[in-house]
Amino acid sequence: MNSRIPAVVACALFFTPIVLRAQSHWNLELYKQISLSDFRQFEPFHQPIDLQNPDIPLLNAALFYVTNEQRKNHDRAPLEYLPALEIMAFQHSKRMTKWVFFSHRDPVDPERKNPQKRASLAGITNPYVAENIIRLFVTPGQTYLQVAEAALQAWMNSKGHRQNILSRGAVQLGCGAYLENQFLIATQNFQHYEGAQLRAPEDLLPGGYSYPWWEYHSKIPRKFASSPFSKALVLGIAREVQYYWGTEMFRTPDEQEYLRMGFPTSAFVGFTFWRYITIAVFSRWGVHNQYRIGELIRQQELTQVFPDTSMHAFPYKEFQIGFLFGDYIRASFGKGQQTIRQADGVDTRIDYYIGTIGGYGHCDPIFFYIRYEMMGGLDLKYYQISMGAGIGLRFRFLF
Image (cartoon, rainbow, N blue to C red; front, side, top):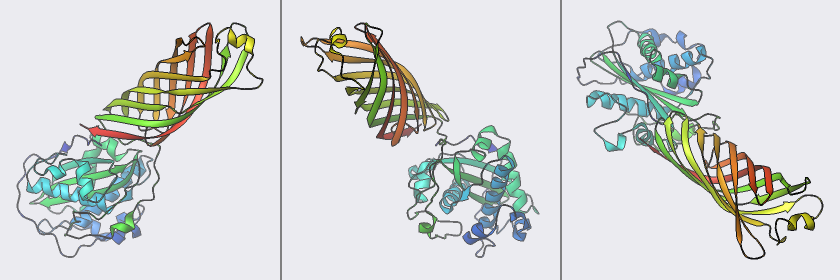
């Protein structure tokens, strides 16, 4: 998930070492005890920041709560706190300070070069992470809450950062700050799409602490929303089962209803060019087996078109071009070709046109769709609707 362009509040930076206080007014249990409705009554949030010895866990918590307060003010659900996201946010803010850079990409350590890699070091095994960063000047006498509110207001004044904060696809949040010689760098990390699954982290919380990560495995189900990748190459392959229902129009005006079933293979390649939208080319190939509903095949009608009436398996291939909206909705249109082998051994190919609307993704990893097809040729026309489902794999390569 690509990150947004940061808002820069201060330009000059000066760096000296900092020592985190041994005893913080904040601990992980307080995230469970203090609610969004009463966090402003927590007295340590209103203490002036000791610029020589700031309480970093307390500042991180203030950033977390004012972010959720802003979401609530815009009718968004509050985000669940996740220590792993605080780890990656804090470590990135610290490294930006120590190595004198300000970017979502770490130019020093390849193992930390993007949010996905930093999430892995924090113990997240399924990262769909968006990131906001900021730097600002802290004046003497400012409280933890005031600094957090100043950072959040600057983010909200930037379109990209605001979208991350108010994203309906976000489910978890962790904030991490680093303060040195009155200059603050802060990071927000948002887990999108589904709750994080965890393993033992390699990085640590502020103060060099670990935490019982096994207690924080998420039970948040997948949301009907997309993770906001901005630019990526997407590849997928799947095996499907597909059922058709339709009518056949022979030379006579009679209509014959039928069912058709197949197990096609499908693949696609796409390019995500803006946040939730992927333009893609889809391909499918396989064999259909056809079964008619009601009375037996009317031989007289069918032999006008197919001399070999026992042939009910139809190989086909097709291509479509269209869009994936998020990781769920697909809309595409294309053309296919079906092969019918007649009694004399001659293959006849019939072109047809397809429109597809799909839900719950494509190759990701369980999906379904509906299609409408029109086919013509051999004085025969098909009009059919099909439904299908499948299992597959999707690969995404970020730019």
